[in-house]
View (cartoon, rainbow, N blue to C red):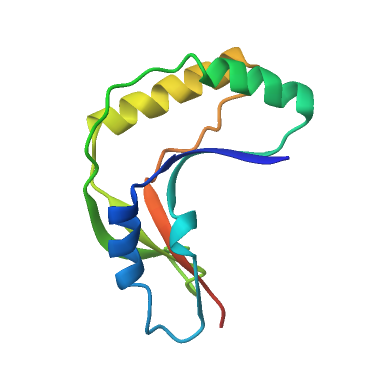
Length: 128
């Protein structure tokens, strides 16, 4: 299984994002129902690890919070763009949730990622 930990958005937000997803030649737009904010990519995971991850993440608790989507950007930051995204404004609640997720994954035997969180929502993948 290919796994990641993410926040899904309400339909009102995905509809607004979908409204800006057009007009770029070579873009393959992400379907609105797939918009999400990835907290942690886990990659290919076996069934035993999945069970441990599911148990550990089931213990994560956080109050609801607001996210402000802002700006448009691309990855990689230098060179030819491959991914078009909208960013998320700095948010202490999001960072706290990310820390809780990382701690839970550590208890499930998943080593730390080591990369800083760059919260964004992928809008398109760029061809050519």
